[in-house]
Image (cartoon, rainbow, N blue to C red; front, top):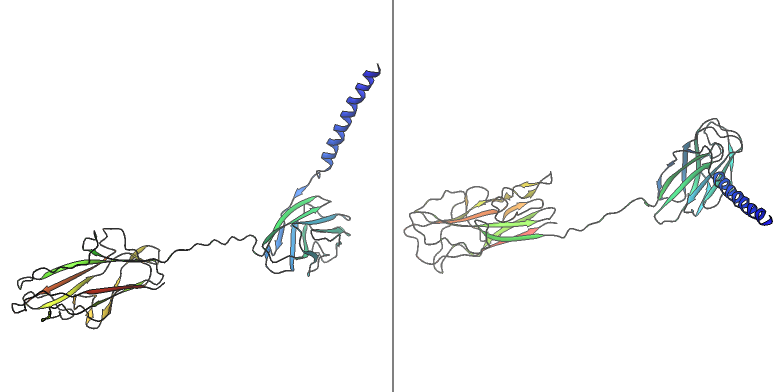
Length: 340
């Protein structure tokens, strides 16, 4: 009989403890709690101390004796009364309460006179170190129960600086007229007074320089042998087989330049130098450095073969029956510079 009574007492004890635990659980959850939107002005700052207006609209006016607890995470260096009036919570012109229990992460505002409005603003002065940090500022009122939180972004704590480096690129190759292989030779062949002889090659230039590139041209001498010099063509003169002429034609790349829409449709600009107007008709080959083609932004030389993003240069020669025999030659040098 005694054992049965002891067993019943153990069961009752367990039920009592379970009931107590359930009661504690429910008592820790506010009844009728309302979530509110908290707004901070300013919401970000790199100036410490910073006066912050904490604003929210409660679910009802606050009764006398209501406590409004402001908690922060992490803690500030210090929290003080804001530089703007803080006692008039509802901005109706009358003081509503007072601040108590100010620590580095908690402020309690107690309502001394019930508020008349649900719109509330509490000014606090936050002091924080110079490191980037995001501070959670939470509002909790006791009667009615309003709960809300917002973030103060201190010293750009909500910013991410993304960086990248693009290496400088400048590429140049002399290609055959089909842009299928590199070449450093332009062979006019055996000349005859009956027809014009030509040879050609392409300038393949690429760069990511912001201000583009300039290509210049200079020959080491006129087209000549050790004892005779070929007559240079007169600038802009037409080719006339049967007369002694030597020069070049320039066909600038029609695409490849970066344009305003971030496409690559811009054409190179052929230089227009007195006596060497490379942009129109035939031109003599200069023996002193002259600008040849330019572009004022980055330039894409394209993949190979590419006949639009590359500049075609054609040398031509006409001879007279009296042009001295011999092996004629010259070396033409191109120099490409970029402006980054």
